[in-house]
Amino acid sequence: MAVFPGVFDPVTRGHLDIIRRGAALFDRLVVAVAENPDKRSLFPADERVAMMREAVADLDAVEVQAYEGLTVEFVGRCGAAVILRGLRQHSDFEYEYQLALTNRTISGIETVFVMADEKVAYVSSHLVREVARLGGDVSALVPPNAVQALKAKLGA
Ligand code: ADP
Image (cartoon, rainbow, N blue to C red; front, side):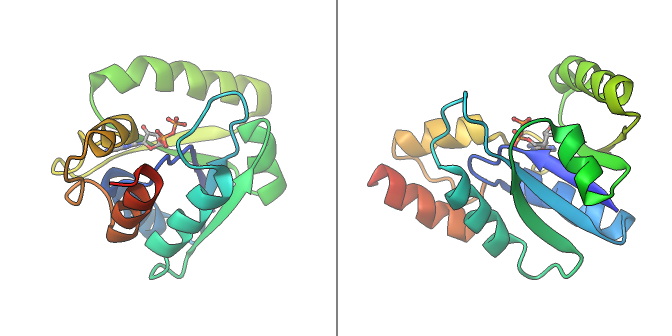
């Protein structure tokens, strides 16, 4: 069993690719949506959770939960020993390296990294929000329910 934590503001096709790969590697995968109170997100946590639940509804081994506070504490409460993270390009490495070692030092929990399919490995929630804010078409970058949610949120 593993936990895939993130902000998912909004869920992208990159996240979904990592989730599918994680679901094939682990018997159970909890997608953990960070409440993230200090960082202002476009979608509040309950909407990010609902959007993610809909996007992974076809995957039996995957469940979605919101969490607050330390990721490793949530992982421990779930009874999992592994954090799953995705790696995109080189620029992700430095931050992920620090995060994985910090988490392991404070809790003993290991992080497993998976590479997304190269067709979606460049996708980021940040750029999706920017494109959507400016009225661009994000349907190749996020699942259909996130396209609708972005339209509703941004009034586009
Ligand atoms: P965080 O803000 O915690 O990094 P994100 O929702 O941005 O949360 O990302 C969650 C995880 O998904 C991270 O491990 C990130 O590297 C990974 N990820 C995001 N987009 C992609 C992508 N297109 N391909 C591979 N991994 C990705």
